Length: 258
Image (tube, rainbow, N blue to C red):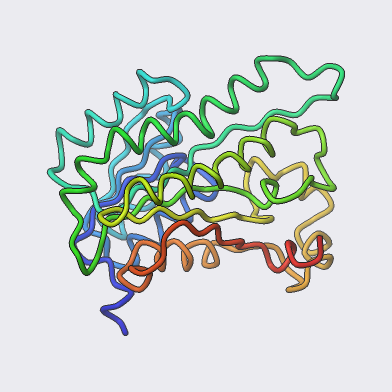
């Protein structure tokens, strides 16, 4: 069973790797034995800090790139291709959000969010397909794992003014299903739909405190780093080699009571 979940020898790319869920995923991959993890994010200073923090766990490298633009996607793809002949796992985790009242919601609030959350996922996946296919075997296909959200399942009770965010995450879920058929059998495509995890993006939602917010969930707590690391390692490892096209809620049961 240890070998079933091990990531020994695997190379992974994690976008949105400068903070929050991206760091949780990267830490889990390194702890599970990943040979190399590449982190991508817009802010170079954040990347450098995370690389310094995680380097004690294994080989990790930061690549600054704005994945809301085609040029940024190509920058990342070219940088990875210059360093690796194959990539076993791609985590499309980079995300943007925007909140504003309905009557004031700007067009730019849709453009920015969809450029990063949806178009960027598609373009980066397509750009890295050759490296992913090079890593795939019949027993252990390559992986693309997208970060969706429980906000892609239903209208959020808190933060109801995030019109473009919830719509983009519903699009990520459908894109995951669509790509799973397109890229099978060499590449498996699944999505994680996080609920409430402490991060900069959920700071407002957590303003009442983690304990108070968690008390309203069936499991009586908010998500913790190991919760995200666990699902990430499972989906990246041979243990999930017969799963594709799924969207897995990691939300403490919140989606069961909405």
